[in-house]
Length: 489
Image (tube, rainbow, N blue to C red):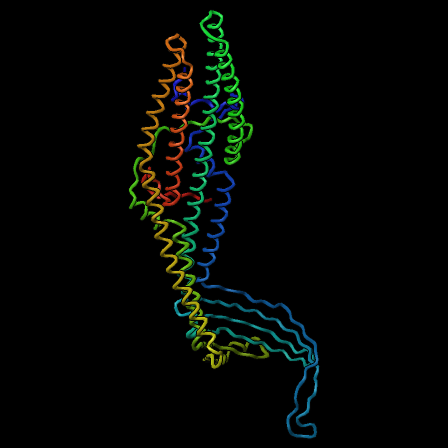
């Protein structure tokens, strides 16, 4: 009779033995996190968010553009108004124009985020030829500096400095969370297969034992020490055991296919799954887990992002209630001359200053009402986010409390399983030797052995499921004592 701890390490018996692959739980999770579809989707989503953040960072760097128009040809009639004196004074006339031009320029711009302003520098050169009058003009602007300042307006750049890094941090944490979710799912599927594989092993053993008992009773009936109805009862037990074996085979085939599909393994590949006996962590500090959750959880960061977006909407609405202004300052040098060699000799200064304001005079207080609504939404979102954070932290604490009793439950369940296994072996031996004749004792011992085994596997599954769930929520490796990180190529 096999010991239960040997049964827990039996082969995953489907498929050809030569094609068998051996996996433990850690290896299965690593495979899934590398090649499963959920892991691939998580990495693609992170890369998209990372590229968005990189693009945002580039907005604070200077930009340069080359503007080049090699040829522009125009032939048309233009309308003009005559002077107010003379016979045709104030009248309208048309004249024909035909010209061709070429221009080239370079613009350099830099955003000044704290001031909500932009500083730009440009230089340009143009050649203009009036074909109708045979006039040729060169126009040169070697330097032109422009400063544009928004006054009393919503500063999107200032808010983006808070929002974009938060979004990127959430995306980074979300990648780890999603890959740890893969670990949770794999652990559950892993134990589905282990449970089904051992159930099949137990069913096979029960069938062998039922067959042995049936043959023993047949022999005893020949010797006159047993009754026909007792033999028939053993025969029924043997048929039921055979049916249980068939059902166990079907269940194993189904859950193993789901497992291999999750890991993107060949469906014809036979896999041996090892039952994890060593526990990485026996106790987790609840306060530490809550602090890690509050610091690392993408859900917490998402709540902070929602609150920040509500504050941004309120700031935008407030900016629309008051005065908006803009100031533009422009200074530079330019020159125009028919001779190309003269366009740098006597450069002319050019300056321009514009200050403008706008404010609502009559909008029936719509802007103020929009601001009040946005402010209420901001306060509501912040309050809801704070309550949600507390609830999530409380859930983590409850889960830690449940996890911390799993080790003790495992110890008790394993001891029960070993005692039930020994009791079943002892009862079978006594029945075979004739020391006991009541078959119900054998059946009860078998049922108790099966029940205690199932309880042990369920507790073991609960331990690993909760362990990886806590890793997923805290993004922390409690075994190594460090945060979880994944490399994205």
